[in-house]
Length: 97
Image 1 (cartoon, rainbow, N blue to C red):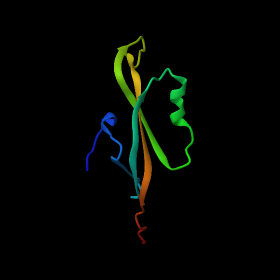
Image 2 (cartoon, one colour):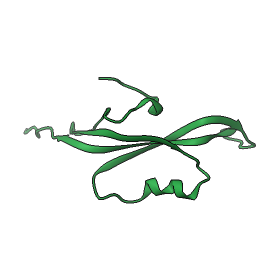
Image 3 (tube, one colour):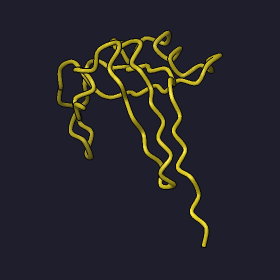
């Protein structure tokens, strides 16, 4: 299994596994990876409700440019969007005591 903190490298078909504090594991499969201009109002469409169970991961991408922001010192020219569809749920059996 590949572990990546670089969302830009995820490709359609790659799995994303999320494990909850209860041990349940959700497996999603990447269906899309694309960049959007954060100043384009249409880019907000990725936040709309969906008919199926998906996750949408958003991170910075493109080129970093300096601004007068006192906290970050700048911004990135793009946002990277990764969309993945739920394919499997593994529940951990509850332990009795």
